[in-house]
Amino acid sequence: MPQNVTKDMEDRMNKAIASLKKDLNTLRAGRANPAMLDRVVVDYYGSPTPISQLANISVPEPRMIIIQPWDKAALKEIDRAIQQSDLGISPSNDGVIIRLAIPPLTEERRKELVKLAGKSGEDAKVAIRNIRRDANDEIKKLEKAATISEDESRRHQDNIQKTTDKFIAEVDKIVKDKEKDILEV
Image (spheres, rainbow, N blue to C red):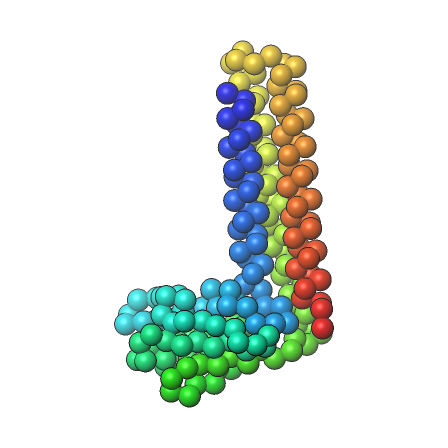
């Protein structure tokens, strides 16, 4: 029974890490990354649709993203959605494809992005700590129900804390790597 609690906890913590990585991928570092467009949603025939479902997205060079819609009628809508997004990039449209030239980040924008990365990391840590609390509560319930002894309960809580520390260290490393990536000129 306590093993199930630990396994469930680790699964949930891994999901928190995966969510953090996904969030950080959408942050714009100095170079082009198709994941930057994940948050951009196009109004395609009345329904909000992600760009990745409407077009082929490629990165031919480090500071350029090319979007090639499968339906040429969607070109203007994609263009408009990118302009209205918070990316801060002006698309150039030649009637067939859309080119996004990624300008170098200003020092001020880099600092802003580092703060956003730190906030995402902090949110992930909070999620991991909440998962730890839930796991500890489950172990305490098992102890109260006399399913496990007090010593076993203590041992499992120590293991839960060690696992939590490991995941929080991983979050710190991921955020630190992203910050380094953002600050790299």
